[in-house]
Image 1 (cartoon, protein in one colour):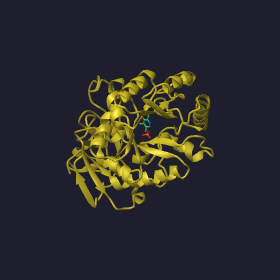
Image 2 (cartoon, rainbow, N blue to C red):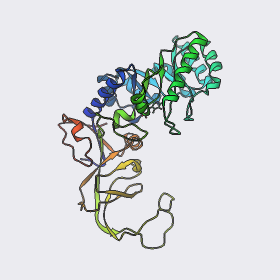
Image 3 (cartoon, rainbow, N blue to C red):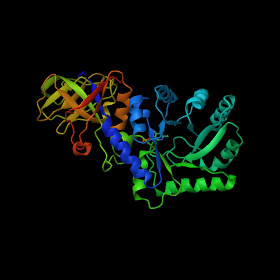
Image 4 (spheres, rainbow, N blue to C red):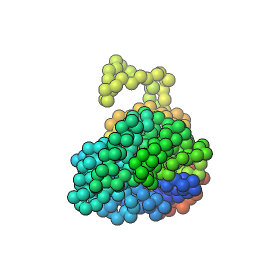
Length: 377
Ligand SMILES: *Cc1c(COP(=O)(O)O)cnc(C)c1O
């Protein structure tokens, strides 16, 4: 094993894809598989497609282009549109999410130049304060969009629980539904896609008796990590350990818990605080902020992370006496997963375990025994 290394269990992801697709589709909601966390990796994208997702969504046109070129057979939705990329967008994305009229106009021109019509979903700001047209400006914007020859407005959407953590609850979803109905009536159009949000819509979906007009979600985190993002609670039946990160011990032993000497800033310009617990059993691992966003790592049960800098992560291993050369397995949150999948210092290994993933899903820090392995990224 080369370390640090992330092991990606494709069977567990496949299981999550099938389970979530079934859950949402039984009540008429189709899901787009969001691929931005995996940096346009075709092997992962193909797992999503093979297990039933016809639509993939990514925030970067470069990732969509990569998947397109690598033969991923899906409809692509672009989640974030740049004015400087409109030519590429109309070429590679089937649909793009938009919230700015000047970009939509440029998309229209680019589409007309290619003799096509580009489809857009108009994003509406419902309180999370990231992208979206303010509801009060909506009628004017839609009126202008409908005049554009190169654009077809195929739906509206909203994105909550991202920037400000605003919950996509019953009230927000009802608001989106009624905006859809109002626009349809006012302009005599039909809006086939009403895209209510992302993985954070799970709790709303499970608790509501009336989905209203919402018939589409863009789902990333819950497909990969098996949890809903607001409370980080596991979703029943899903695997929560499709990704495991391994790092190697380079020093192990007892050291004081409090530093000795006068202290100033640490290597990252902050001033860490230490409590004196006496001597503790510690291990230094060869992984750091250069490799992964270390804040989102969870060590095996019985160990805690003391801190990390660019190349070292320091563990309090409590009762466990690790040896130099041992590898320690970490589970990983979505932010850290994003950083690891884009890191060229962390090896990626794809495995397919035939084990029933649910049996293993709550154990942390275990060693996998892969039955089929691939290497490379
Ligand atoms: C990232 C993103 C998603 C997916 O969010 P998850 O929490 O991973 O499900 C959906 N929509 C937009 C606009 C996004 O940027």
